Image (cartoon, rainbow, N blue to C red; front, side):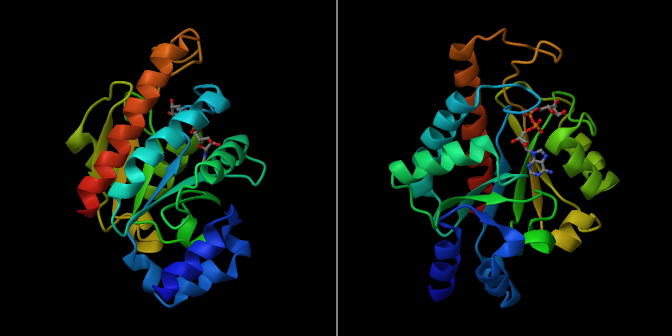
Length: 231
Ligand code: AR6
């Protein structure tokens, strides 16, 4: 309990992992690895060009819906930089809605180095995937496939060949993957968000009614997938 409080106090505000001694010391004790944690990027808001304000509303709505179903688990929204617009928006809205900071917080860091780079143990990470479930393409997808090595591509192909927007697939990470050994990640959940970029497949041409519907579906699928792993 004491350890959980220490961690959440540190994490209630946005934290930069490497500058956060409380988080690091908790992890050195080994205890926070007992807290099932999903680290997820903001789906669709970079390469897929989804509006940040609307995306932050959907994230908050879905976090609010799932936060009381988590038991001792927690959700962490991750982005690469301190200046991340989506992290600021979500952090402000989460505070406004009094969402429990022990259960949900934001974190600045590379999702493939959350433990070694930031002292944050996350047993599950989400990927903002492409419909073909293939490596490359930039963003978090390229980073995760590259850090996980070929084992992730093989394990993914065994589970699914493609994804429709709004859907996800859970992939248990083989213990041979560096992401497993180095970072303690046991599962990757690939999620396909809605696309507003005309240069990418299935562009919604600015239709935010459909876009928000698909984004809600994507987060529901992601959070339900995480719950199915931790239960
Ligand atoms: N660690 C943490 N967050 C990251 C990282 C990282 N290593 N890299 C990017 N982000 P994006 P999308 C953040 O573009 O908009 C790919 O090409 C980023 O700042 O990865 O859903 C796929 O193949 C942003 O906040 O995903 C798809 O075709 C968030 O992750 C397409 O992009 C999502 O950015 C998906 O586009």
